[in-house]
Image 1 (cartoon, rainbow, N blue to C red):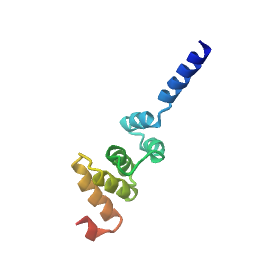
Image 2 (cartoon, rainbow, N blue to C red):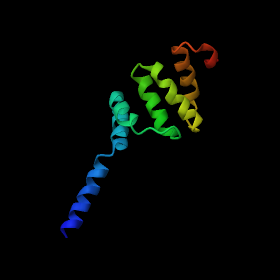
Image 3 (spheres, one colour):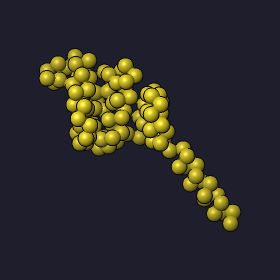
Image 4 (cartoon, one colour):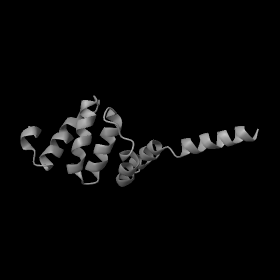
Length: 102
């Protein structure tokens, strides 16, 4: 009985402490620095959604220069967000990479 309770408690804590869920809530509240902190350690190159959200968090917190690698990774991973191409080009322009942005 005690082992079952401990296991259940660990599962509840693991679900409640999920950084991805916290990041989703922070994004909805427009707390973009929190989103970056939550996602940055768990982003994978092939995860289109997380890379897109991270890119958006950087862009929407006026750090568009830092969003470039995340837009690029989201596009390579096949994001379905059509606006990602536009903001990727804008981030390239912000970094002075005009030829690549064209």
